[in-house]
Length: 100
Image (cartoon, rainbow, N blue to C red; front, side):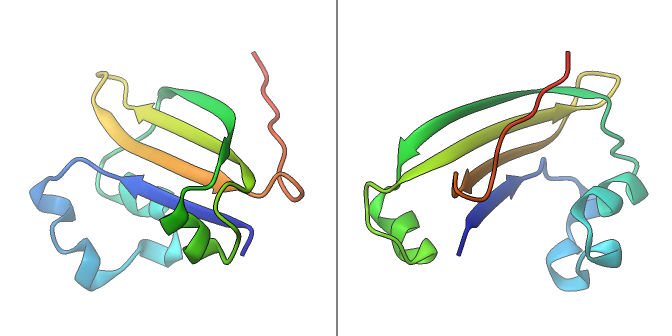
């Protein structure tokens, strides 16, 4: 395992059946857009962290192993939160690239 991602979405009636219906085309981004939740802007943070025991078990690594943690908050044009994602990424396979 080289990554673990947890995505949190605001609850709304349109997305209530999502766990049963699944993602549109296997894509969360496509699913959100289909439900009128169009990303416009956001913020992202990245830092190196030691894996906590529970995450280490899921990733089949030792607790404390260094991983890149990325946190991303995406909003629509009206500043409503669309998604908050926390990703744990093996730095041997991932890098961060930003344009500003």
